[in-house]
Image (tube, rainbow over all chains, first blue to last red; front, side, top):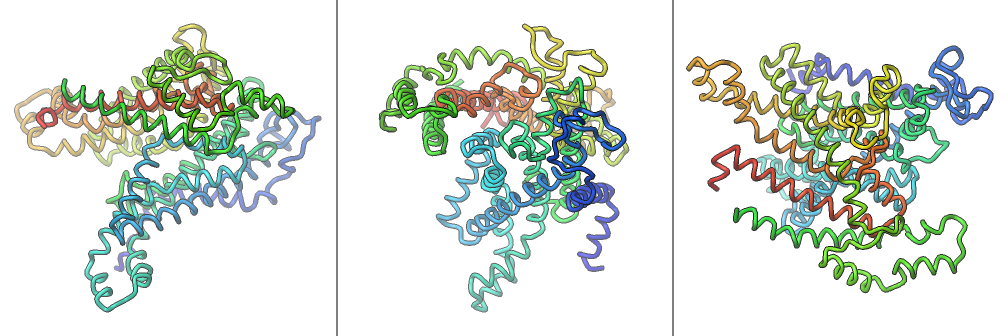
Length: 282
Length: 307
């Protein structure tokens, strides 16, 4: 059997992978179909319907401005996934670029990049995120940039170590002996062989980014009202924990489900694709 | 002893570097403390007065010189927003944070080691898989979700414990925040304990201990756990160090009056002296905890002591 085929068969038999795929798939579907699935405008204020308990026309109740919590939750899924995904793409791109630079060309570039990586990974990440997000004022763009620009450390270190191994392989030496230019060598031979661990670190990283966005929004430093961000919805609901607990609990649970789904997926992929990187990715 | 003294000496330049970097970062990033204090409707004269009062109208190099001179005397300056010495502000909040951090770490060590030990007894068993899924869940659930769930369950529904706040040193207020803060550490410690125990379990000395007919409890404590302890201590040290610096999210959910909420307030109000002081304080704690962990390694493993 080809290794790729046996690998996907093993993944399909892994309950963790299946559960993760179902959770993530469900949320992605909810996000895509949010406008169709929502019966109410997520921003539509209706003071006559304030703080209605879950049930009837509002399966998850309404908030203090009479907005439908389920509709806001569905639209919040778009926001959460969009930020998690785009920030992770940015940091993966930076991480792969710097990791290849360091691992393939070695020398001074390697030393500088790895010291910068150590510094970034040593800093308490939430504190750094809070400081930068606060400096640029709470906004989605600021959160995206902060997460994207701060999250490449793990990927860079991972790719570098992978490149260090691959560049010594015989097929790379052979290609170099044939006189292939560096760019072709990199894209044709080195990079494709580093892809597995990158996919794993990307998946686990989406979970981290979603969690970070939710935390920043919870602290009032992410998406600003009335945007339906899960983090800020949960924060807003804290004041109503006694009278209208669904306001805080629904978005808080949604975040947990999404992050758990991505982590399950990442964990299963790690076991299947790159077991040697356990505990180092993301 | 000489080792400890050398490490403490090496900490001074490190702390100075952290202080300089924080000072620089704060002045490079956008955000004007005077503007944050003057509010939305300000006039230029007020703004200029506040800037002069805070010493922000001087050249940056002069500001830095003054900051370093004060620092050398152990003076962290006066907070912009609270108009109180930074040192006093931090020290007044720290006991609360220390209490929360110690409570959380105690819970995490006990439950994490127990769960990890349970999982390692029979790898692949139902208990093992439950612990492994549970620990993944533990690191996935955001701190504030755990906090809100616990506060709702025990504070609102069952009315067993106060859902938030802190009243003097009443221990009932500590339970929910400490439990919340502990979950991610518990998950991590359980994972590390399991992996570490499984690695040690295959060693000859464990087989010998069992063959000697030692009681299983003694084999576990004296031979397995003692030899698997180093990775566990590493995780515990790193988490305890970060908790001591204040847990912004947990403290926010429960209205806990610790360093974490002070940090959040300092950052959102652009309180430069307070931010600088807190970052320096965290770095010092981090160095101290790391030193303590290294000393523990030496106590746990004679081979480390020799080198």
